[in-house]
Length: 501
Ligand SMILES: CC(C)(COP(=O)(O)OP(=O)(O)OC[C@H]1O[C@@H](n2cnc3c(N)ncnc32)[C@H](O)[C@@H]1OP(=O)(O)O)[C@@H](O)C(=O)NCCC(=O)NCCS
Image 1 (cartoon, rainbow, N blue to C red):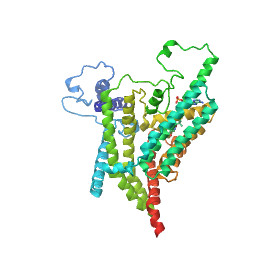
Image 2 (cartoon, rainbow, N blue to C red):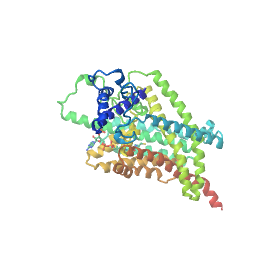
Image 3 (cartoon, protein in one colour):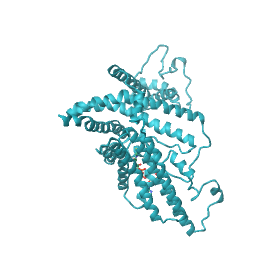
Image 4 (cartoon, rainbow, N blue to C red):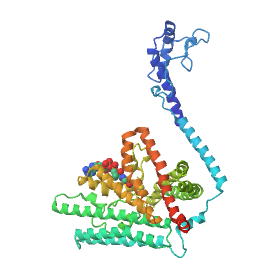
């Protein structure tokens, strides 16, 4: 459908350029005569307001291309005009839809070849049963799910602290101390379990630590918002004239009525990291929408597992030898080979998590704010990418970390560095502890975003900036993956051999 508009557009542009050419071409007398005949229909062909045309004889009527047959013969006195080639920017031509389709066709063809090559080389490696072993080492020991269930203790602790603060049973300082202790334990306790319990698998450990990180961010927000409410209450008491209208109060919960287990657990399960006393709610659960998202969720889970087993794992395994031999050209070749499945998996993961999963949870809970991502794919700067790809985390960073720092007068770049430092810590926490290996690659990658943002902002604009962001995503991630896998491989599979030799 868009094609029709595009083709029409390009025809119109060609007609338009003809009109301007005729005005400035310095034609000969014979051409002048022809121009007189062609000019009126040409203007009309441009699609503008109709121009009164002189009565043209049938022989002088322009054909569909705007040419005029002079006399009774088919004489084409003019067939050239001053005009730019389509690829020149001066031509004003911008309809590259066909080339985009060509890119897609080439992408499908080259990936089909890769898919076949992979199948011929490795056979079918997809094994859903093997996935279970990623979560469970010992069928009688389930440390990761037990850890997740135990996280309730910390939510309840935060709730009890808030209850006491609301009635003034403890002072703000004591409350702060208790919250800090609770939040610190939320990060330390699962880390200790993941490092000490032998039966926990790296994947189980990642999931447990991710749950605890989410609880940490949520309870931090819970405490922050309740503190703001208490500060508002103190201000309202100091200035009793400022009464809120009754209509607004009727349907909304106000502090401290929000301090209930129902409210706490709604927030704990809601797809957001930022607490609010009155979340926007959707009017009903849309069953068809929910079903579509659930089916997507199931389908993409299978696809992700299949792609990782069939495509990513063998590529990573094949990269170990070049890394061991420090064969740089082979390392780069392996890196570029890994970049394709890694990027595809990351894109599918993005859709699976931010569109399918979060919408399922939101729909079930009638949670109204569905802005889980924005158009990060159009990012022309690194900063725009981080502002738009993961909205729950960005919103939390901005509301509870970045803006409070700015309000205290901190410099914008210092505050940004602080946020990226915290984010780098969590990225490293989620990788190093499950792998039981401290290499700081994830931390460095996150911190590198600050100079990268500066470089991209300084040297690349517009489409070049967008291409630079895509390049960092496509190449940056497999570098980090290979670094970790290589180190993990050396640590767990190479060390005994070296020791024994
Ligand atoms: C650091 C980060 C929060 C900066 O966000 P940003 O949107 O670029 O920040 P800006 O400088 O543009 O300022 C944004 C806000 O600060 C507000 N602001 C600016 N100066 C202010 C001041 N002195 N006081 C209070 N607010 C101020 C602006 O009004 C704006 O508010 P709005 O968002 O409500 O419109 C963002 O880059 C980020 O989230 N980074 C980390 C992301 C991350 O690690 N994600 C992990 C995903 S896995």
